[in-house]
Length: 61
Length: 244
Image (spheres, rainbow over the protein chains, first blue to last red):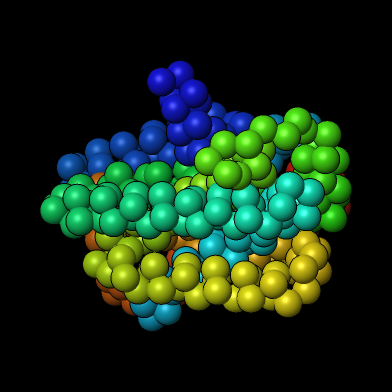
């Protein structure tokens, strides 16, 4: 069971959890904007720019 | 347009993973015998087909909006990993995948392993090939299932993946050596871009957002992801991202 969980963690989250956590936050923020009747299609592309910046800096440090 | 992206993504992802699986199968075949290695390969393909056949119909009954939210999120997290590693490799900050080195490593390990016979097969050779193909193939099965179910065509995604399996296996049989000359990083870059693009598009839709022009905005998202990735490669090459 532990190995199974580990496999899925490596598969989806990988070696930097910040990317996966950021994706969850960004999708939640998109849903919140939609609920507030605000156009939110732009948020995820912007989140990708920021998440790549943060995770690349962490990897290149 | 979406169908082309779907087949191309499944084909590229499958080709990348199959090049790696081929290296393991070749190492197992040369050192432990082809019968055990090819039986392991066949058993893994049957297991992967069973996973796709079992989960495929189950995914088609999930409401499309919920499916796109979950699948989009998973693809985005998964795609960002591929993309980050591909950007780092392109910028020279991460070693390129070396099929020849991996092959030599697998050969040495397989040559040193003890001979244990089960069901008439060399067990090490069988399990090495089985595990290698199953683990590499699971990523392909994941992409086929998620892309296929969200686009409403698992067979189309499976056809793209199967095309790559046939191509890589055919070339592998012809050259009987690891496919070291395949532009693996370029292919991984392309897969990372595709996964991230579909991840952005579907998870936004799943969260209730409407894209300007609906499906017509997909090429725009693709272009955006390519431009951002290329910009980060440039910044990393000039070391601007490290010192910023």
